Length: 314
Image (cartoon, rainbow, N blue to C red):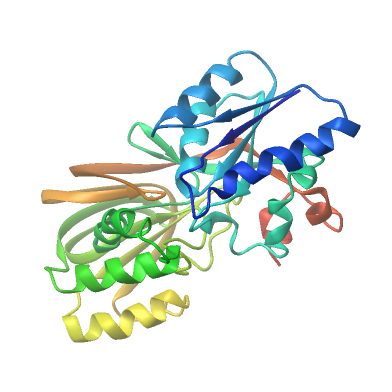
């Protein structure tokens, strides 16, 4: 197997991704393996590199950056059965890993080089692949604005998200959506004014918001969370509970588990897939069960008899 490191120097602060290379090279000096390092210089390049390298055979690709870098690498890997995805968190968010114990193990390249890959689910968002969260509505508007704030000096991922929430709060919040879902209870449709509709594979997004606290990325279902429109006063109270994952029992919230959700809007609305945003009036989020092999540090798997995220995360 070839080990490919894709380093995004623009992720996070202080070009942290570039620090991964000397750490990994030190390991390879005493443990010779085929490997290569690539430093990205523009958006989309990580996808190009991952696609090219995976086409050459059995490959483990290390996404060294933030959630956007992981997203690009995932879309380059696609559904190659001989490719594995490893995450070395160097960005401002790195939300997909937040619910795991000993998350700091992912910062050690040697722990991942010696790690094991297990299958996890992913989301197809129209023509794109997503590892963590997809949505349409207010939180997608926030994600769209967050991109502009997170590169400001001294602004962390969570601070950028909070700034984007504050800016979005002073605009129109809800909008009319038509939502069609295939769930464990069967076909379900909803229509009305909603703040947003979320399709979740992971638990956290937006620099630490616990949007889908029951999600497990390898359980073969997505969690669909619908938030009905609220007035500005109630939105402030809701966001505090939403950040802490205490919103599922609120009257404004409905949750379903299933395999597909289609969301239609009367006017163009922002959609986010792991922080990458675009605008449309019609989007579908579909489950691809066990579609990517995700690498865990060996230490994290030591006491796990099963190959389930749910056991690792407890």
